[in-house]
Length: 135
Image (cartoon, rainbow, N blue to C red; front, top):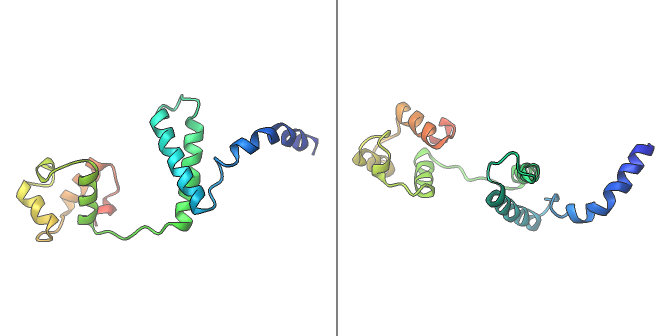
């Protein structure tokens, strides 16, 4: 019990500063946390040796927990997921040779064709996502 009391006394002066950063209970908290995470990602990147990497990891976990409980993600078709990923990566139809020719990609995006298993696996590998994204 004495150790807990000493710990609480040692942490208390810092908690007032840290608590707003580590609290994600409301939408406003969530928005602030996402903005902080974005700033941390710019500063830290994927440098696991960076002194703030632990904060980046913790904040990401808190954001994910909030999203799992409060943010409903819309269902998307495989083609919608492909369109989104193409836009995010600034890709054109001809930038996806693993799917097929520009014409094949065009037909997929217009709903004239369906993604086949080979294309799904190729896209999953290219974008580092689960094949389920495209099903």
